[in-house]
Length: 88
Image (cartoon, one colour):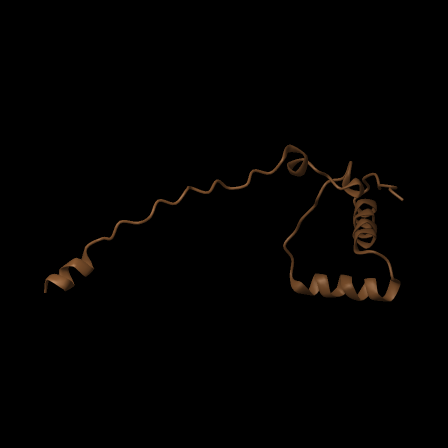
């Protein structure tokens, strides 16, 4: 019984130095890819059908998804009579 009681007692743990999480450098935290400079991100959660159709158009035209979305937004802007963006 004594052996069982001693086995159930908490055993001292060896001291382990606390590991500090790595801190990102200021340069890494503020890096912006040159292709994204002066641009902003627009995000929407849509049905997967939208993505499938965009990928079909991309495959047919060979154009980038970014350019296709910009074209679609300009068509929407024209429909609602707001200035279109000429970014090419």
